[in-house]
Length: 93
Image 1 (cartoon, rainbow, N blue to C red):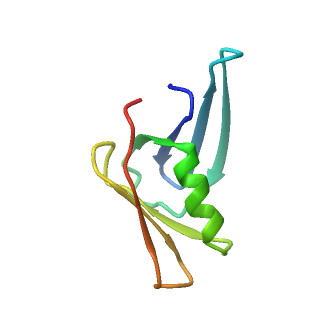
Image 2: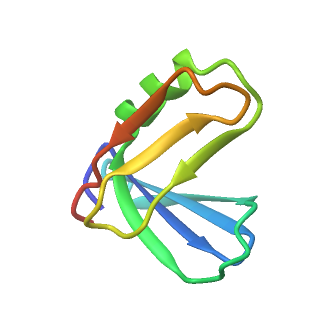
């Protein structure tokens, strides 16, 4: 992965987040539960700065991250508000 890119991999009820650290040649990986029952594996890369900026203006405990595939824009929403939708383009992994 490129520096500044995080990889999101979504599978049945699980989100895997991976970030590459080019300076140490190590990947950092974390997992979290996700309300995703479809089970179709989806993987895409995003610039972490863009996601960070979006999350800094959404003041909630739960978001909706809607993604179809690695070639289509993703939509991030506050599940408690319909005031704003944030669109983010994936990057090449």
